[in-house]
Amino acid sequence: MTLAPAELVKIRLAEYTFSSSRRPNRPMSNIDICATHTMTREQAQEAADSLAADLARKFDIDYGWDEDTIVFERTGVSGEISVGNDEIRIHAQLGFLLMVLKGRIEEEIRRYLVEHFGCTIKP
Image (cartoon, rainbow, N blue to C red; front, side, top):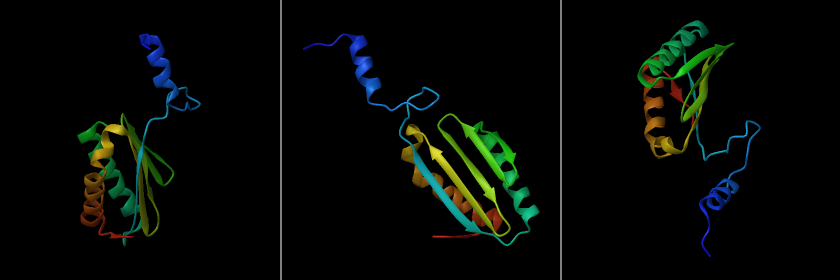
């Protein structure tokens, strides 16, 4: 049996579940890194802001502060950097194309946290 192109599209779309925004949910890969720091909260926020500004320049990421959390987004990745008194947590959702780079991205985040925040990475 041969399917017409419109029938193929319907079948492919049926493989996805739809969110409230009516866009298909695509496969995502999560990064969740938590680390302790010894900076003051203000110093840690300044360092996190520098990190976000650097990422914005290099990767065209939009970001902004929501209380003690930096929220960032661009096509293929979204997430947040939460800054606490002695802890920083980075959570990101990688889209399909970036999933293959998850390990390298995690390594780079850990390296940055150690070098720029003096962090100890939690297991």
